[in-house]
Amino acid sequence: MSFAKHNGGWTIAISFLIAFLLAELPLPVWAAIWRPAWVAMVLIYWCLAIPERVGVGIGWLAGLTLDVLGGNLLGQHALGLCILAFIAGRFHQPIRVLPIWQQGIGIFWLITLYQLVILWTNGIQGRPIPNWAYLSSALTSTMLWPWVFVVLRDMRRKYRVT
Figure 1 (cartoon, one colour):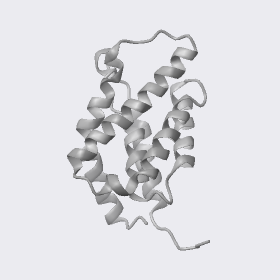
Figure 2 (cartoon, rainbow, N blue to C red):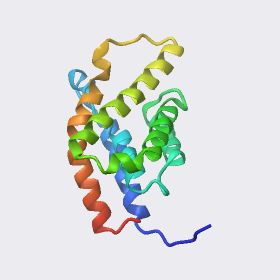
Figure 3 (tube, rainbow, N blue to C red):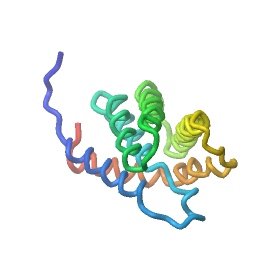
């Protein structure tokens, strides 16, 4: 067991706090369907960058926080983010070496999987199933991934997050 000193815990926490704020920011009805999955993208980044510190447990806590903030079924987002964190952590080495545009393709599929888990839990609850536009947030998340990646990478380097 290693007791190596880790730096930058506050940087990780602040990045998640900003993602929660962006996730709950009020948007017009027409724009709400295009809202990127901010918390999922931040979780994916940290799972790829430092999988030994950010993983399924952090995904579970972030999901529970999203559930409480959004007034959703407790555990709905937690399940989706746990699955996302597991996949991102498991395949972090091959994903990190890809060019950023190829990472974006992987992000699209991960966010789509996350959205389908949320859709599935909504279906179990008996909520009406929306049309295919529901998955449009995966598209906007994919388009924003290069910027999210660069901003978080620069934060990680500047504050020496290890």
